[in-house]
Amino acid sequence: MFKKILIANRGEIALRIIRTCREMGIQTVAVFSTADADSLHVRFADEAVCIGPPPSTDSYLNIPRLMAACEITNADAIHPGYGFLAENADFAEICNEYGIKFIGPAPEHIKKMGDKITAKATMIAAGVPVVPGSGGLLENIEDGKKQAAEIGYPVILKATAGGGGKGMRVVREEEEFEAQWNMARNEAKASFSNDGIYIEKFIEEPRHIEIQIVGDQFGNVCHLSERECSIQRRHQKLVEESPSPFMTKKLRKQMGEAAIRAGKCINYEGVGTVEFLVDKHRNFYFMEMNTRIQVEHTVTEEVIDHDLIKEQIKVAAGIPISGENYIPTVHAIECRINAEDVYHNFRPSPGLITSLHTAKGHGVRVDTHVYAGYEISPHYDSMIAKLICRARTREECITKMERALEEFIVEGVHTTIPFHKKLMKNEQFRAGDFNTGFLEGFEMGEEERE
Ligand code: MV4
Image (cartoon, rainbow, N blue to C red; front, side):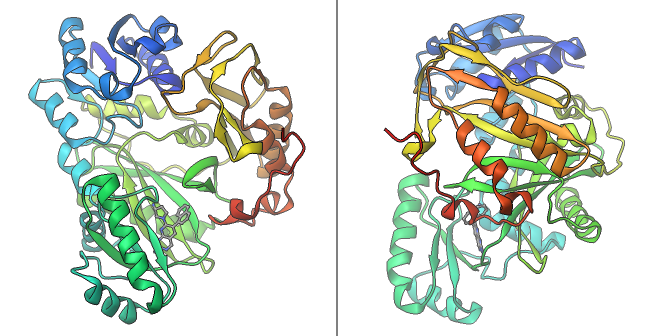
C-alpha cells in the first residue's frame, strides 16, 4: 500500500480524499495556491506545500510544481481528484516517468476516451450501442451533408476533442447545415485547438444516465449501477440521484453489461463512468466515458454503502476487486450547492461566507470545504457544498432533502439552495418525469430579484 499520497486538487474533493487516506493509514500531502492558504484541505493534510498564485495555470495545473512538491515530500502516489489534471494523459505519463503512481487509469486509456471518435470506435468494437452516425471525422461540408442525408435529420455535429457540450451543434434541416458546421468548427478550434468534427443522429429529449464501473489490474470489471444526471443547466449538473426513476431491472442489466464490456475491452483500471443517452423507448447509446472520480460519486456511495475513493486507492495499489455488481436497495439524491445567484441567470457569487449552518440528521451527508469566515475565491469553480440525502424510497428521499435544504443556511453569498427547494416541490420532478431539456422550461421567478 502507498505510504504517502499527494492530492493534486483543492476544495471538497481534496478533503474527501484526505478523509479516506486517514482511515486507511496513508499519509497525505496537500498542495495549495496562495488563495487557499486558509482552506481546510491544507489544515487536515499531514503536510502542505504552496505551489503558486491563485490562477490554476500557475498552481493546480502546473505540472513541474506538482512534481517538485512530490519530490520534496517523498510522496509515492498522486490522487488528481476531478477537474484540473484528472484527465490529462501527459500528466499521468509524467507521473509514471517519475515512478509516482497516478491514481487513475493508464495514459493510453485517458487519451483513448478523451478523443471522442476513438472512444466511439472502441465502443463499437466492444459491442456497446452507440448513436447512429459516421463515427469518423467529416472531411468537408459536402461529406457532412451527404452523411446527414443518409442518417436523416435532425443530426448533431460534435467536436472530437470535445465533451461537455462545447463545439456541439444541432442541425434540423439541410438549409442550416453550412451555418452550424461553421459554428461547430470555429468553436472547436477556439476551445480545443482541434477542429475535427463528427456527426450523429440527434436523439430528441434524451435522459443522461451513467453507469459507474470499477476495474482492477487483473482484468476484472464490475458495475455499481446507475446515476440519473438529467437535471443539468448549460451542461452543468445540478442534481444527481441513484437509482434513476426511469430504470427497470432489464435496462439496468443491459446498460450494466454494456458498461462492463466497455471497461473489459480496454482492460480498464480504476473507477470510471460510462455515460449514456437514453431515449423515451429506453434505447440507450454510449455518449462518453469519464476516466476519473466524479463529483456525483457520493450518491453511488450512499446507495451501495462503499467508499469509492478507497476502491480507487486499493485498485491502484494492485488489490483485486470482488468482481460483484452492486444494485441499490435505497435511494440517494445529491444537490450541488453553488455560490451562484439563481435569480440572475446563475451568475457566480464569490465573497465572504459570514454565517453557515449545514443540514444534519439521519440520512443527511454534507461534503464541503467551507465554513463561516471562508472567502470564496472567484478563481475556482462555484461549487461550495454537496448535500446528499439517503432514504428508503425516492419519495422519502425528496422529503428529507426538502427538510435538509430548509436547515441549510448560508449568509454572505447567494447560493443555489432556492433553486433546489423549488425543484423538490416540482410535480414533474417528483413524478420522475424529466429529461435533459427539463431546466430549459424551469423559471426561477421574480421573488428575490433585485
Ligand atoms: C447528444 C444529444 C442528442 N443526440 N447526442 C451534451 C453534452 C455532450 N456530452 C453530448 N450531449 C448531447 N449529445 C445526440 N446524438 C444531446 C446532448 C445533450 C445533453 C446530453 C446530456 C446531458 C445534457 C444535455 C443537454 C443538451 C444536449
